[in-house]
Every structure is written in structure tokens, then in C-alpha cells.
Length: 311
Image 1 (cartoon, rainbow, N blue to C red):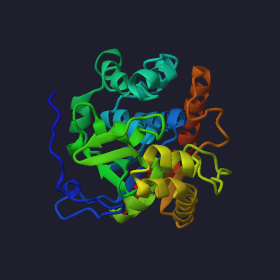
Image 2 (image 1 turned 90 degrees about the horizontal axis):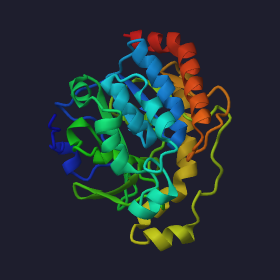
Image 3 (image 1 turned 180 degrees about the vertical axis):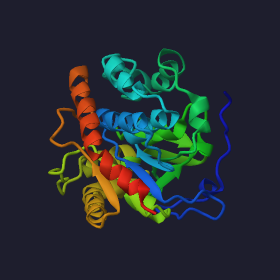
């Protein structure tokens, strides 16, 4: 299937975080918001499989990093595909390894993931994806502005470059150049894009997080400023975005809580700390995270259905 290469009018401009949906675009009312988290995304894959199995369909999905990757198979309706990617291939050096980093400049083997894996080993249903009424908004970080740029279905090329960019973590990934932008992981401008969904007119949202309720980020950035300047010195706005990330992340958690308390959001997150880090290589731990995602989603189904049923 030939994938459309048209770039939307919105992204021909210099996008800013929270640009409202413009006249002529599909106006939504309920959003699905997916946090990233590297291989912690196994939890999200469990949640999304439960949604697919129960015909829970959202008008639009906002995905960041691993959340954007998970969104693809959710929209195409391929139950179990995301789990099989994590479980069957996590120990394959082509999927994630220091060897991949040395050979390709990417810890995660994007050429393998969006190439052989998606076309031959676990074929992605492109036709179902583009036929689905569910829209995708994949969040990336623009290195020159430090702000988020979101790409929709109409912006995707055959290699799903915007989704690669959304998942391209600093220091272990190449900068992704796409339609005049230099991009990296969307988590460094917005880890939980609930505000973007609200600004797009989605008054109700289901938010899938990959950390349990006790988690808050500390005040220090995960990367020293000296290291950031050495590698990304050309991009001072990106450096500032990375340094601000803990504050922004915690404020996004606060917004999630406020929306939940107001009855406008359902939060689905690990019921206890999951035994999975960002670069987990143990398939059994990933299976535990997946099963926890399924269990937590099943418990939240009545709330999700009630939220979707609101007029």
C-alpha cells in the first residue's frame, strides 16, 4: 500500500505546543493520551489490547515516544502485536543493543523495527491503519525551539519517520531530520500531552501512564548541562527543554490529577511499581508489565465506558 506523503498545512508552519485544531480539521471530544517510557511501554500495550478486545475506540490518540509506537498497532487493530514485538524481539540485537548504537547511531534499531520487523516478521496492517477513523498525533521535540511538534497520519512516510523521531532519545539516537525540522524524543517537550489534547478541544480524556501513582520526578535533569552542551550545543532551546523536563513532567501529572478529580479524565497507570526500566532486556519482566496493563485496564473499563458515553 502506498503511503501518503502529504504534509499538513499545520506542520508547514512553525508549530507551537498546543496549536488548536484549525477549521476544516476533525474536531474531537474524547482523547486517548499515551505516555512514553521506553520498554515500560509494554504496560501500555496491555492496556491497548484490552481496549481493542472490548471495541473501545477513540477519535484521536496522542502518543509520545513508546506511546506513539504503541498507538500504531492499536489504530490498526492488531491485538497482541505490540506485546510480541516486546516479548519476542527484545533480546534481538537488531531491536535494541549497544551493537546497534555503534553500527547505526541508534540504540533502538529503527531501520529493523520499521523495516523487516514491520514488513515481514510481524507485518503491520497499513491498510487497516489508514482506514481507521482514529487519528494519530505523534509528538516530537524540535531542537531549534525546544517545543513540541505533532504529526498526524497525513504526515507519515513509508518509514514512519515522525514516530521514529518521537522515540529518538538523546545521546543514544541520531537526530531525525524531517520536513525541515531537526527532531528528537517528544518526551523532552511534553511527556504526557494532555494539555495538547485539551487545547485541541477534547474535553474528556483517557490517559495511560507508565509510572505508578507514587512517582514524581526529582528536581535535577537526567542529563548534566555540560554533557548536553557538548553534544547539543547548537540547540540551546533544546538544552533548556531538557533541563525543564522534571518541572514540566510534574506539572503534567498535576493536570492529570485535576482532570481526574473534575470527572473529565480517567487515568490508567501501574497499580504498583512495574519491574521494568527504560531499556529492559528481560522478556519475562516485560510480560509482567503487559499483564499488569491488561489487569489495570480491565478494572478501569467501566469508568472508560462511562466517560465515552457522556454527551
